[in-house]
Length: 121
Image (cartoon, rainbow, N blue to C red; front, side, top):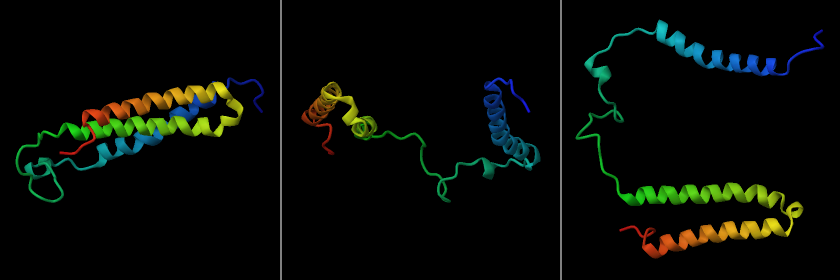
């Protein structure tokens, strides 16, 4: 029985096992898989159909703005959950801090709304 051990040994062993578990199948597939490249195999696959046109397309800016707004409000939700769970223990200071946080986000939403970012044209 080991009585005097370094607690980081288990961490290193676990990290090594995770790396072997993840990389061993990839290495085996690379070594054992047949390599027969052809023009058909190198072609772009698009839902079983022949690719048409250029792969580079311009997207409307609204897609990116909607995505950014979604991320902002998703992160807001992530911050609200632990705050709501520990609300009784945090006191008035935490309530004021969360009110400031929400006011900043609502101000940003109002600004985006006023600029017409949320209107789909």
